View 1 (cartoon, one colour):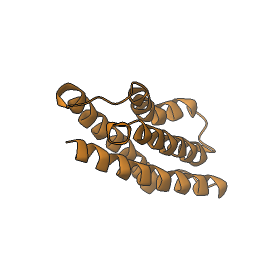
View 2: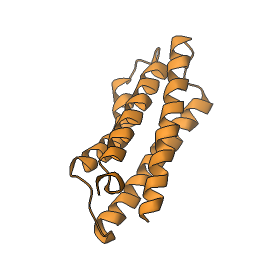
View 3: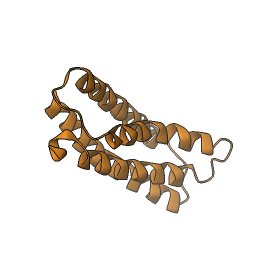
Length: 122
C-alpha cells in the first residue's frame, strides 16, 4: 500500500503541474473555463481525495508514520480547489488563471509532501 501511495503522489505531481500550466495559459489567453478544463479540475480533486484515503489507511494500518507536517500538506492539497472556487464567487472573468495558479500551488504542496514522506524520511 505504501507503493500505491508513492505512485499516486507522483501521478498527482505530474497531473497538478500539467493542469496548472494549462490553466495559466487559458488565463493569459483570457479564455473561460471550458468543460474540458473543468473535468480536469474534478479529476485533480478526486485524485487528491483518493490519495488522502490511502494515506489514512496507511496511518491506521501502516508500519511507519511520516513527519507530522506531511498531514498538513495533504490537507492543504484537498482544500485548495474549494478555496479557489470560494474566492471566485461571482468573479469568473479570470477563473482559469486562478485555478491554474491553484493547481501549481497544489503541485508545490505535493512536492513538499513527497519530501516529508516515509519513503524519503526513513
